[in-house]
Length: 99
Image 1 (cartoon, rainbow, N blue to C red):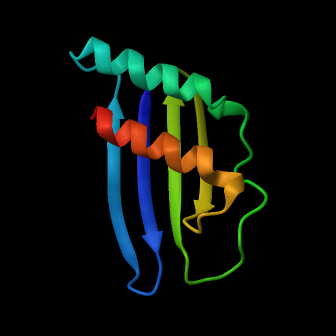
Image 2: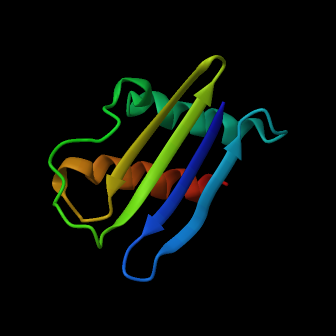
């Protein structure tokens, strides 16, 4: 399984890769943690653009992509502290700590 998190946009036109993980790496404990997090948020069933976000072109946007076997899914959302995407922000923080 591969997990990629990118942050883009905002006033400063940020373009950064926050996380790039491949669970086939030698660290089996970390691989299991990442795979458990993906399952816990039911990632492959999430909408590509979650509802409940604030509108605005100046927000930073997160793009989270998970590839597992033949499946790939990307979720994009604003970094706007909306309650509707709090679980995705937590997901990113937890995955970033694992790497």
